[in-house]
Amino acid sequence: MSVILDGSSLTLDDVAAVSIEGDTVKLSEVSVRAMRASYELKDKLLHDGRTIYGVSTGFGDSVVRQVAPVKAMELQRNLIRYHVNGTGPDAPASVVRATLLIRANCLAKGNSGIRPEVVSRLLWHLDNDVLPRVPERGSVGASGDLVPLCYVASMLIGEGQVRHQGMLMPTQHVLMREAMAPIELEAKEGLALINGTSFSSAFAAMAVLRAGELVRFAELCTAMTSEAVLGNRGHFASFIHQAKPHPGQVASAAGIAALLADSRLAMEHHQVEELAGGLDGNHYARLNRPIQDRYSIRCAPHVIGVLRDTLDWARRWVEIEINSSNDNPLFDTTTNTVHSGGNFYGGHIAQAMDSVKTAAANIADILDRQLEHIVDEKFNNGLTPNLIPNFDAGDWRAGLHHGFKGMQIACSAITAEALNQSTPASIFSRSTEAHNQDKVSMSAIAARDALRVVELVEEVTAIHLLALCQALDLRGVADSSPLIRGAYELIREHVPNVSDDRAMEGDIVAVLDLIRSGTLGDVLP
Image (cartoon, rainbow, N blue to C red):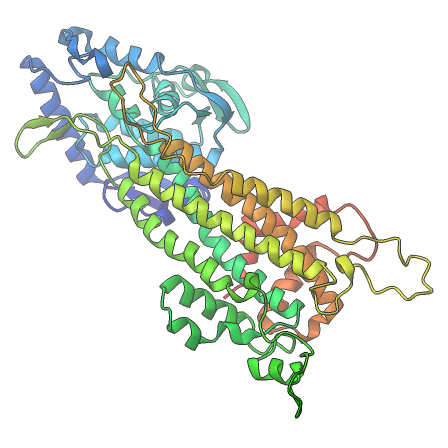
């Protein structure tokens, strides 16, 4: 299938289809005409002698230096070259693909004074999976993602390196092999390519898409935890949550309740009351068991619901951003005018990602607490300590095994790392570029952090799911709800029960693959 770019209708599902699944991309005829018109307007204004930022002037605080039109092309090349100074690890291929797609769509809106041929070359690289090497660090999120996007622009002018078929090679080698000439950027075109939020938005898109799946896995883990501790599924009754009707909370409670339908392990509230006992004619009694579960179970809809609701508005913000003209200046072909502004500022992306990573980190925290309850014999309602097998006293293996003790330690460490990385980045504005960029968004850092936190929460989820499957083995998985048994059986197809202490690193990798490939999500309602 092909995704058609028109600058206005790109969705995050489209981003996933292209950046992850490899769908092809085409420019709409409307966008081609719009780009052509703004390019022609820019060209006319330039040759009329107008002073236009970044077209006939230098960049940033160099705006006071005007150059003749004959120097415009060299100015654009220099703009790209002096920003090629990124550091850190290279961005993942999915993020680079999303960056190319989003930048092409923003330019396809037709306000940026760039030729459609330049944008078509971006799409050629995308469709042929010839991707620039883009270091992750170097962007302050205003004037857009200058440093990382310069690696994209460098590719178009035949410089830098690209990855193709698993190999890193000079861009010029690929162009020579394909008998293609580098793009010769005209006035404003280099600035149009790099002066935007597309790198930040690519990370943000990946974070939102993957965090959306975390919601479902957190609800599964909560339902399985409720079964593992013979919990009170009355905590998820609709009446409770309709009385505090945050949409995400209501939806998460309903999701957990649906997963627990027909469970013979997690009990209705009246069943818990009956097991707890009562006064039986006395003035005081110590109940046989608590009638309420701990907060990490009972309040799970309130925690997961925050992520649900955060993603609802964060997704809207990201989709607005990826369908925006976020460079400067912009050309209005209806009035034949040019406008200088600050649409390159990534404030909405930064704020959205700071919120997403905080809500996602709270998922790691609640799952880590749930894990503690099922491995700790003081709280797990009769399960074995650390979920070790049930050994008879005479079994020579008794006392030698520690089960999931090490897994809980690792889970706690990963959770701490997720929490540590959830500090808001948007508050760390720095004055840069000779005090011209005196307020910047830090959107790229916020978005990278958000995706990293989501990845860490996926690791926490994988460990917790392994422990939960072990707990249900001990408890009797035949009494689990049908939906939970489906998830359990899928995991057990890839990872065996822990019958003796052994290394479990490979188990975590296997479950992570089920999470990240979408395989586990496919068995959930």
